[in-house]
Image (cartoon, rainbow, N blue to C red):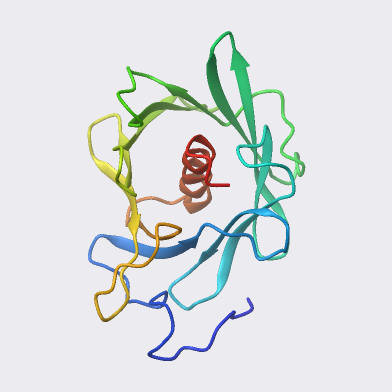
Length: 203
């Protein structure tokens, strides 16, 4: 993978060590392409691992989560039912490289009353081989913090504003995402963070 900046002490702290909780990523809520919305995700070595390049307006009806080479990992669609909105994620694989299967891999719906700009959403993970599992997205108004909780109340991942190595809090478009050690599918977590970005009109 290509490195996008030198590993110096003056760089944004995207190369911090793995935390005791799990693996850490840096999310920059900007596309690397001019005149495009989206985000760019770096691993702990400063390498790009995920990206979204959306040429449409923010909160588009369809976006693609890709790896560095542009391979589509998830296709995310925004659906509107009456006054409510739902987001569906279609996972790409060898038999379905375009992520256009009829059955979504996950669905995100607002599951409780939203007060102010608080976000609380229910995530349903569909599986062909097992019963559906559930997550919850939680974000508070005025806070650049997102928590992903499983059905048993355990923290799966958390994103919040990034701090530099000197303790300076960076802008609200630069986040640290920490994924718990027992989570295998990091691309799924990033797809859910993408839905959060769409809800908040960040990409």
